[in-house]
Every structure is written in structure tokens, then in C-alpha cells.
Amino acid sequence: MTVRLGLAQYGAREPLPDLPVSRSVVYWTRSALSGLVKVVDVGPDRQLTLDGSVLSVYARDGDWTRARKEYWGEALDMVCLPPRPSVLFVGLGGGTQLHLLRQRVTPRHVTAIERDPVIVRLGQRWFGLGEIPRLEFLCAEATVAVETLRRTRRRFDFVMEDCTYDETPERSIPLAVSLARLVSRRGTLVVNRHRRPHARQTAAALAPYFAEIHLRRVRREADNILICASAPRG
Image (cartoon, rainbow, N blue to C red; front, side):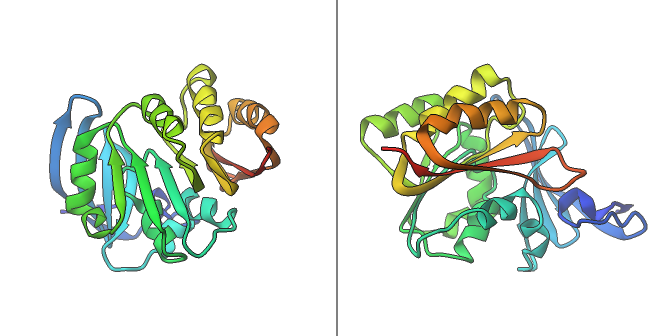
């Protein structure tokens, strides 16, 4: 089947409405936690979708240029990473950002909090996560997993939170603050937020924990605002 889609849906900065793109559903299932989950091949990209929304992208042709232009790549551009960082992803999905990260550095260890084991299995089978060494999954609610990591005194050089993007401040801000306590002395926390006022509320809540905080809107037409917090206090 051939449909006409604009590549802006999964990476290009300018929509191309007349470009035909081959689309096929490779696999689908229903998850009690996430709803309808599909693995869809769209042109050269493989997408992980939840109820029709794109969660992750995997470059089947090895060309990650499209993903780098989205918030996954923009977030990494904001961070100064050591050559072998310890990394925590809160909401990994199909692991788009992890693949981009491994093109820049060789992580010493990666921990991923992903509450839905269905998503983890799909990521391992269809999105290349099964081939990544030193990758640890914690299948639990983010607040529970973060508290466990805190109690065991785990620290990370790079923390990326992408699981409460458009949730209420009452839920998302406490999670961001709890993650601040997991950042190593020279580490960085990046949070993906919707552009509406709660992005600035999150930044204000993180200010007591970090000496440097920067906000970046991914694109003028996009709703993503990235909050980059570095130089942890104390």
C-alpha cells in the first residue's frame, strides 16, 4: 500500500506532502498499560506507535539524520558528555535517543525505566535494543524506580526524562525534582516538556538543585521544550 505522508511527521524540518511513502504494519498488539501498540515501517524508518502517536523511530537504512533533527538529537546537542557516561533514560520507548547517543559516546552503563514490559520486548525485537550491551531495564512506575535508585545511591552522568511530557505539573514536576538527586557531580539532567507554561514551572522547580538551567524550543512549529539542568549544587 502506498500513502502520501509529509516527512515532517518523523524528522524533516519542511513537510513534503507530495512524496509517496511506503507504509506497512509489521506487528501490533494491545497492552494493558499502554493500549494499542504498533510497529510500523514508514519509508526507511520503523516507528513505534501508541494509539496512533509516534513514540520512537528506528532508522532501518542506518541514516539517523531525520531523528537527529527532532528532540532526541536536540537534547543531546545541549549536553557535554564524557567519553564513557553512565546514563539513565526515564521513558525509553523504542530507544531512538539511545541509538543517537551511542553514535557520540560509548556508555559505561545504561539504565532504562520503562513501566510497560510489552514496550521493552518490542524495543528488543524490532528496534535494535536487544543488541546493545550493558543495558538494564527497570519495569516499574517511574517514581517507584527512581526511589529505588536513590536508596541504592546510584548516580548518572546523563539523565533524560521523557515520560511525563504532557502530564500535569502535579505529576511531572515531583518526578523531575526526584531525578535531580540522581545526577552525578558533573552530570546533566534533560527534561522534555510541552511548551505551555508548565515547562517554565519545571525549570523553576529545578533551580535550587542546579547552577545552570537552559530552555530550548525544538522548532518554532513544535511543542517540545527541552530543559537542560547542569552543574548540580552541593
